[in-house]
Length: 151
Image (cartoon, rainbow, N blue to C red; front, side, top):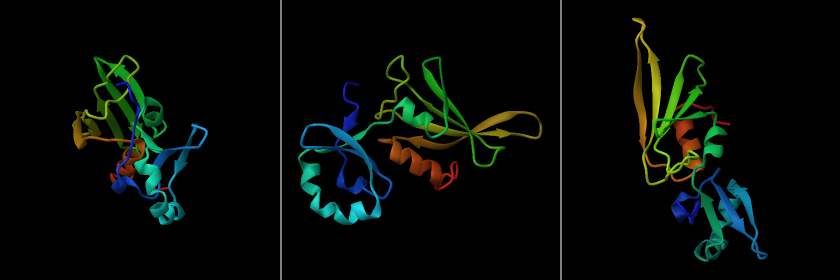
């Protein structure tokens, strides 16, 4: 994957949405949308249409910033994470597109919950399988699944 960024659709914008904004000098700065930004967004639509707002696809760096520990095995990425309830363990899995473990946004990302049975057997339950376009979506999903706390 050559391009690590995409231009977001207008329906993706919400409080907490992480974007990069292009300045007149050609530099890009990171920005997280707040309620005030969304209220002013109607005046920024031309920036979106002109390609001056972009969003980074998920990277190994921002996936690990969510609390996952990544381990490249057998062409797959396994990320383990102790959930907010310390007895819960979650695993994130995807097929990387290069040897650095980068995520392909056109491939499914799967989140499993590891279940320790009283019999001593360990099983895993799929709690999400689908596409994640950006790290903001992953953070929202982890909060909705109650894996991480809403901060």
